[in-house]
Amino acid sequence: MKHNLLITRPNFDVTTRYLFVWAKKIIELAEKKCGKIFDLKKQRANRKEFESVMRKHEPGLVFLNGHGDERTVAGQDNEVLIRAGENEEILKAKIVYALSCRSGKILGPYSVKAGADAYIGYDEDFYFLYDNDKQSRPEQDKTAEMFLEPASQVMVFLLKNHSPQEAHINSKKSFACQARKLLTSSATSLESSAVKYLIWNMQHQVCVEK
Amino acid sequence: MSNEQEIKQLVMERLKTLPDNAGLSIGAQGEFNRDELISHVQNGDEIGQKIIEVELSFLRGLKEGILYET
Image 1 (cartoon, rainbow over the protein chains, first blue to last red):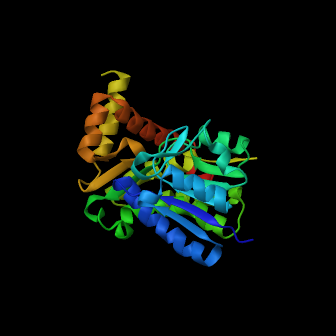
Image 2: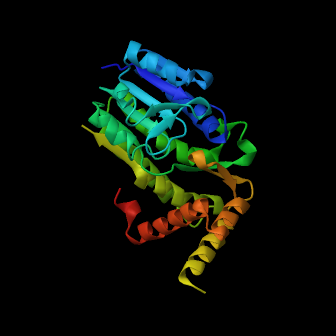
Image 3: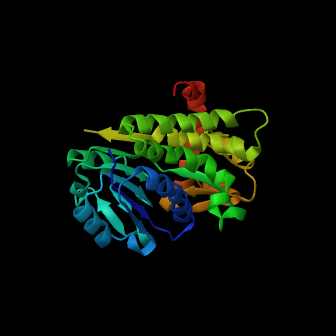
């Protein structure tokens, strides 16, 4: 079954710039696999537009990129898009992936309780290393790729019609595989440093389901 | 040296291996270079505590074979 996809892509600091660029790759894949795609990027990643598109078009898949905390996920300039206890019912009957810090802790369970089919996110901060010299060209940053590629696997598998649990497990496997590759004697000091953050992200990715 | 000081020292030594052109994103907390990370650990502030937690979690995880369970 082809889902419609809503994706939020704020872009206003280093972290959101990287997520913005990496999410573009998911949009390219979604163009082959999805029905309609609603790309709320930059200024369009605001609460009014987010709620309006969610209510009007009811996308089955929701991919949130941006900053967050235990109860919220934010959009452009940190405007809160969803807050637990306020508007999580908007995620009813949706499969959600939040590439965002900590929202898997409270917002995830609240969303599922309010009727979301599944909420995949992180219950702690999401870490990634990047190359300062590549900040203006995130798509060429091999350092950030070590982190954002495994994190993207959730969406890759969801778009291939795998279940949320399968998408979650495959993303975790991808983090572990990346970490194992870097635990070799030929790894650079940067690569060796990356392992602990990869494992952290892997351990703190959660999938809450009905 | 107290246990806490020893842990801080260990984490700071490990952070010194980061190249100086590397940045670390910690979500909404911001982005940090190697020297800033070391300084946060030294000060024992919130960011420093997070960095220590990641390091200790990693060492515990390795001991428990975390990479081979997944």
